[in-house]
Length: 297
Image (cartoon, rainbow, N blue to C red; front, side, top):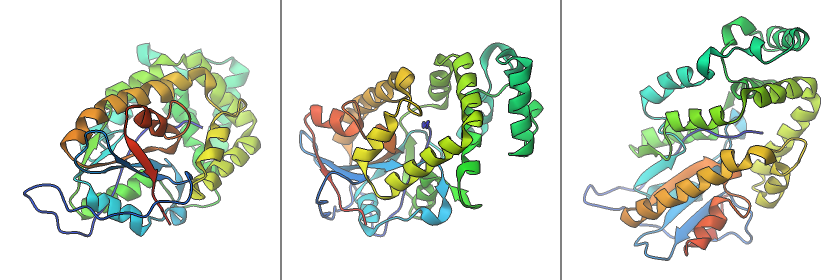
């Protein structure tokens, strides 16, 4: 499942306007299976934190530990994939969803294929496809996710973290611009995206099981199993993994090298960006930082 875009956090310690908040120590997890990681060492004056999010879940499944809240309090700023606290990002996002050069879904399918997609969106999602003609197919795949979920009230981990951030007056920043993320999806041929959308519709029961497995693995914080699921050739993203994950991870690490020298930050990005030998945990270790899994229950 794709995963690319957003969000963050909260606090309950007094923060002096003169500088960094006093950092509270956090317990280390017994193994590497944690979504929350502490970053220290190298030339850092204060610890920073890395947290893996999930872009869409049942709202009742989203719970934040006291350790995570403490990590947020320890940090001065919050970094997400995008600065979702900026209204311009949300407004611009609607425009960035469209394909370039006036491309339409009808250009990507045979008449029979288009009819199948159109019927699915009308009958199952109650969305007339003619209103979505210019939208990039990967975004249409994302619109199917609620259909795969056993609840009516859904939210993103990032969205809930942002509520905490606003409550505690934490500044939110983005590692990428909306224009950059839009360009990432333009790099993947629309024809290939269209095939993925059709495959998702044809294999909805299988995709639903896969999505449920991803949610369970995320809730259990099993990073080793998460990596296995991402590498599943039937549902994974091997062909475009470098575009969707690896290249972006390297870019983020380059930014964090500068950002973390100046202040303590809490970084929240899709959990898929954490795992693997090109994931953020491995890349930050290669840069010379010490990363420790934090108890997050």
